[in-house]
Structures are given as structure tokens and as C-alpha cells.
Amino acid sequence: MEQQIRSIFGLQQIHKFELRKTDAKTRIKKLRLLKQALEKAEESIFAALEKDLRKNRFETAVTELFFTYAEIDHAIKKLQGWMKPKSAGRTMSNLFARNKIYYEPKGTCLIIAPWNYPLQLVMSPLVSAIAAGNCVIIKPSELSSATAKVISKLIADTFEPNEIACFEGDASVSTALLKLPFDHIFFTGSTAIGKIVMAAAAKNLTSVTLELGGKSPAVVDETCDLQQAAQKIAWGKLVNAGQTCIAPDYVLIKTELKQAFVSHYKAAVESLFFTEGSLNKQVYGKIINEKQFERLNGLIKGAVNEGAKLEWGGETDFKDLTINPAILTSVEPDSEMMSAEIFGPILPVVIYADLPEAIDFINNKAKPLALYIFSASRENQNQIINETSAGGTCVNDVLVHISNPNLPFGGVNGSGMGSCHGIFGFKTFSHERAVVFQSKLGLTKLIYPPYGKKMGLLKWLKKLM
Image (cartoon, rainbow, N blue to C red):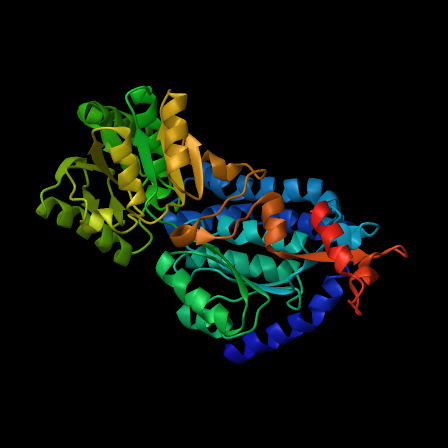
């Protein structure tokens, strides 16, 4: 496998110089080919995601396929404008020059994708990489093996390997890939693995985009519609059985609202994911594997043993790797539940007395990938936004910021670096190259040696500054 990887990488290293010459029309044709291939493979994609994560067809359509189609359509519509060199301002040193920013492909890129949205999180960066004119090697997650097989076949049937190739396999494949001097690496996954990817990239001075995760809080104040907030948080928390990097990880709520929120949350979950008192497994996904199932089950047991109250839910079914939605209160702030990203259908509720206390709680943790604010008070909304840091934020909603290609999506520090989607993804896979076209009237000779008679020029320049 390692020899095959090196061979394909070598072919792409040669071919990238041809790809950089391609115009918008050529790249748009490739994006259309990708969309056609996805449309042709829809039934296989539905079946694979049902097998890997028990995803309902509608959920797969909305969160995996239609999301990708929208990304492709947006790139097709905007690509010609994105590729045009942009004019830049002048300074004294190039007063009569034309200053431009050119967008050139980075070259040969690696996309390492996770298992939780195994199609979308391959295809979204791939769309940007194609739009920017790059060669790409894809490494889908082996944990979502059925979807990885579909992706691998789709790529092989649609593109030549010297342009886009896909390698399936376990961590040893990723290790082999990370040894190579890629021009850019786009990684989506955990913070722990992100550090390994960044360390490997540093050996080759390869630029990286890291889409990680973290503990994304939902702050609920006394001015919001509590029932509506509970319903939105329930959906955002439990889509894909909570295995979403921007899912609300925990709720921060005013002390006096806690029990009412718990009741509203329970009612919302039952209306969304239960039928006649039983969990509806046709719309509620499963945990990806036994390891994650045991980890999540252990988080609940550990929190309860430390004094947390399991207000509702948390039943488990090992046969089909299902953990019922759970909500906990009185969770210890320094417990494992409140230290690591949960990445499952468990919602801790943390109380606060006033907004500064809630803000301090958020700021004492690593910067989250997302932050959600439920408040009718513009003053409270602005205070939370201005006094915290997060990759992205929704006010009175959850998750929806990721669906707008006109907004950058990405983390900050522990939750990631760099951004994707739309023009932000195009720029991620491009180098912004500064180009100065100097005129015959260039003034730079004024600063050439000899300097003896030019001290007066310094005084004149200083006045102009």
C-alpha cells in the first residue's frame, strides 16, 4: 500500500503543474462531473450511511447529499469571479504600479476525513480543492467503511488517479500519507489527532487546515422562549445521535430555569425521536462502534457516581449500539463529562447565577468550535459574543451557520485553524500571490545608493507618512 501511495503521489506531483493552468470553465466541468457521480450513486450512499450510522434517508439527504450539492452549485456559480486577480492598493514605493493578488493552486493536497459525516466531510473540502485547481488524495475513515467504499469507487470511476485518488484503510494508511511532502493538508477530526497531523505536516513545512471540535456551549437566559430553545437544542444535540462536531455539548442556564428546561427538553426529544413512548430507531441513529458506545456509557456512569443526577434517559442497547437521549444536572465541573467533547446523545445542564459567571465558565475552557446563544436581549447577545471566542456562533438557533457558504466555517486554537466553504474554502486551497506590475515611472530609484545627498528625501517621506 505504501508503495502504491508513493506512486500516485509522484504522479500527482507531476500533474499539478498542468492543473494550475486550467481555467474556470475546465474546473466547473469537473465539479459538474462530481455532482453527476454523486447523483448516480445516491442509492449506494443511502445504503452505506444506513449501515454505518443508521442514518435515515431524509437525514442523509439533508446533511450529506444536499449539503454537498449546494456546495458544488455555489462554487460553479462563483468560481469565475473567485479566480480573477484582485486589484490591491498602492504605496509610495509602487505609486504608479498595478498591484494584483493572484490565486494559484497550492498543488497536491491531502484530505483526511472523519466517520461522523463521512460523505459530506470528504466532499465539501474536495469541492474547494477542485475549484482551486489542485490534485487531491483522499483518506476516508475506516470506521465508516461502507461509505468509504462508495467514495473510493465514485472517485475511481470519475477521475484519473494522477488528479484525484482515494485510499481506504486504517491508521497505518494515514501514517504513510503523512510522511509525504503535500502542499496542503485538510484534516477533520479530534483535537488529539489534529496535533499528530500538525506535527507530521511541520516536518515538511506543509500548511494545514484543521477542523476539530471541542465543548460547544449553549447559553440560555431568562429572556428567551424556553420551549423553543429546548426544541432547537434537542434537534441540534441529537441529529446523528449526537455525533456532530458542532452539536451543543452542554447547556448553561439560569438557576431558576433549570427544571423547566429539563421538562421542555424531555418533551421536545419525545416529539422528535419517539413514537408511542418508544425510541424511533428509524429516525434516531446509532453509535458508530462498540468503543464509542462503551465510552459514552462510561461517561454517564462516571458522572452519576460523582454525584450528577440523571434526570431522564440514558438507556442502552448494546445489540444495535443505541444510547437513548440523556439529560443530566449537577455535573461536577472538573468531571470527565465536562472535560472532553461528549460526541454523543448526552446533555449536561450547568447552572449559572448571572451572565458574567456563564462567560467565565466558557472562557475557562478551550475555545469551542461553536457557541449558541438563546436570548431575546440584544445586550446579552452582544455581551456573550464580545467577551468569548468561538469558531462560529448562532443566536437563537443551532448548527445552521454551517449551511451558509457565504460564511467561513472553522475553529480557533483548540477547535481548529483555517476555514472552509464557499470562497473561504477556495482560498484555503489557494495561495494568494502578490504581483506588482511596475510602471516606467517607478519611484524606487529614489532610494538607491549613493545616499549622501538624499537625507532631505527622508524628511519629505516622513511628512507624507
